[in-house]
Picture (cartoon, rainbow, N blue to C red):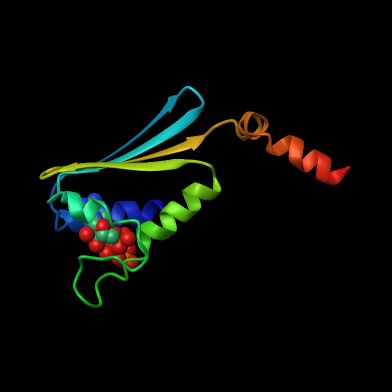
Length: 118
Ligand SMILES: Nc1ncnc2c1ncn2[C@@H]1O[C@H](COP(=O)(O)OP(=O)(O)OP(=O)(O)O)[C@@H](O)[C@H]1O
Ligand SMILES: [Mg+2]
């Protein structure tokens, strides 16, 4: 999934520009940021980028499945993805919970699975 984010970034800059990857830990999350200096994503396109088969690329260049798969994987990990974009500066930010156990307890899921196992 990281390779799709990196490829998208490189394609948006026609492979010329700056790609910056940063990782940080914020409270209970690890955050991975992938930033590029490409053309940016207009608001109407931003609204649709996570839809399966949505692409602005030419026929044969992109299937439009990349970000929908990325989002599915992140959802499975109880994370989230956000995007900020303006021409010349786009950032995709992925949040993944560090401590899944405490997340499960908070949401009551551990309790549920214990009950089911009993
Ligand atoms: N970093 C980016 N800069 C500009 N536009 C982007 C960026 N990342 C995604 N997009 C936009 O989001 C659309 C959907 O991205 P997604 O990865 O789902 O599909 P794709 O890259 O078009 O095709 P595929 O991933 O299957 O090769 C892209 O077509 C592009 O318009
Ligand atoms: Mg892609």
